[in-house]
Length: 190
Image 1 (cartoon, rainbow, N blue to C red):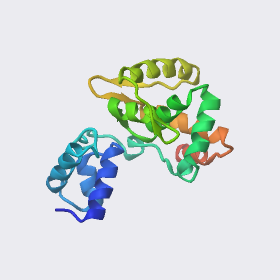
Image 2: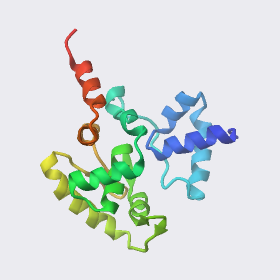
Image 3: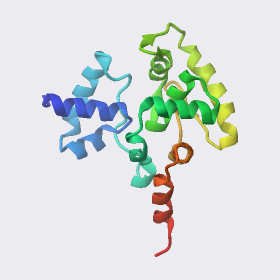
Image 4: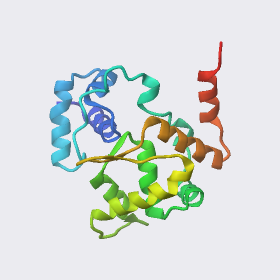
């Protein structure tokens, strides 16, 4: 059994879409020890679904996830308000979009919970509303060259490039250029 703190960290990482073996490597814990923890977390509702085993073979680190540090210190309400303004989204759509930016893939039930959360209250909608809202968001994002992909029988995701593009637009709208400068430095010739 894992210590409570490490178990919480592992479950939070799994919820963010980090694979089991990657969590094990980072925390120096065997994936075989983590798997029962994740199964228990799924049974108790802390995880919607079990994480994948590992990153796809040959995936470079920079392509796994975008750097979210530039927005980590920004208040959630500020981020949602800017998304609503910049992308002409509703509050529920903005919350869902932010989840898609932050996570590699998001289960449909997770998006439903995120959509239903309104000012501390929980709305009562059918899960099909997620598909309707994603359809509307796709239309709004088409001009921004950002695509939301369907993960059949699971949920939705955006590629790393699309997540980076969304972050760039988000940071530019907030008057920050950290992400753009980091990418330019990585691509600059020596």
